[in-house]
Length: 231
Length: 272
Image (cartoon, rainbow over all chains, first blue to last red; front, top):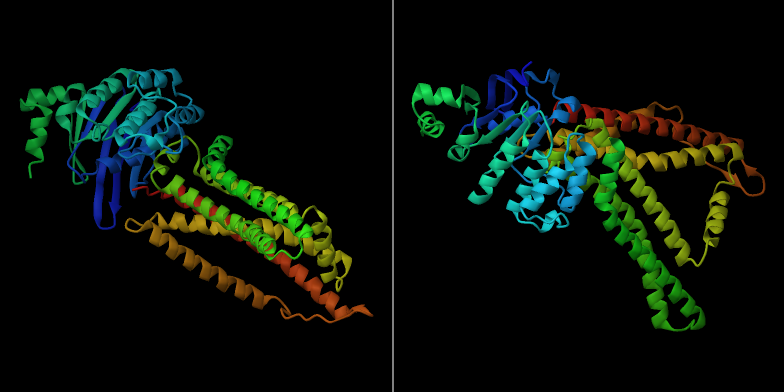
């Protein structure tokens, strides 16, 4: 069974088509780059998979279940914005995740905090935006989920932290799980990707493995992206 | 899961409410102290002015605490479910109905807490609980014109209405937000517009129901020598029945609004 399936998914915002009859199958055990320019539909697709938006039409299933409580149990979502409760301390946020997610690994979260020198007793409100984003990533990657949806996980952090974040992603997802990473910073993540999905104006224009791209097109994903999405 | 949601909803605001409650209780103590001083120096204008100031403070704070509870609860619903925090809350493995119910229960708990604190603040300010007897006697005297059976029913319905009316108001607000979030451009503006439209619909429906009720106009006559007239007893009995209708309609409308909010936020969540 595919991990996630989208069939003819359509989403509009007023007159603007965000997703145009998108059909997609995601297999387990892969790191997938969801790549496209700003406004191409990346975030909309991820939000629909995570249950924050409802599609106008089409079918979506994760492990055979329609989006709902069951799918939220197995999906770990990192939004492109700060969504954590700022009135809490880091350790309280860890307790919050542990309370709601059966697959949350508290020890793993504390280990990552130590590695990044983040004090669990610090209040989230007093942290910089970059540190809050790191905390969010730690929370999301400390789950043993089936599908990780990471929306622009490296957009707001410095290059040194970027390397750590990518390493964190690589180390912390189980072999059966898949990770979908939405970004336009392709060169930074190209080395860790198994598959790529190009999305443009709400249409999936390419769904392929990175090896196929290098073999068939003779160029890197970043180079192909620049060619396909040239202004 | 509802219990866990409620735990965090209460934790999010207990400090703010705690400070408010402490300020109110302190003000009522100061009001009591100045009253005692005034007893010893009855002609001291300065002490009298300060005492009046504290009594006014207790009154204003007691009233404000309920308004603040409503405002904070509305703000909590909006920020926690429909702004950035909503990205976390709506991806938790809980149903939308649990997310909304937790907000209702938290509001109810804070309202009860506010009522208890105000009760003690007034008692402290009044120097004891004697005011309850005075209030009860006055209240009962006001209802001497009616028979005992209707008076009891009236009070039961009144208490139920006092409890469910704020919850019905919150249902109205939550439904307005649920409708407002459907907009892709101005969610808050759309929420306000939805609130106004729902308000007018409610007013029109309640006016129609009132007009449909037989003999809506009632009048009271009371002569202290002969007691209430038969017409007055009947009129009060009718009002009591209307209150029951009010209770039922308020509860049904609130429940319907909760159900519609739940359906919209489940099927048409639009966290752009």
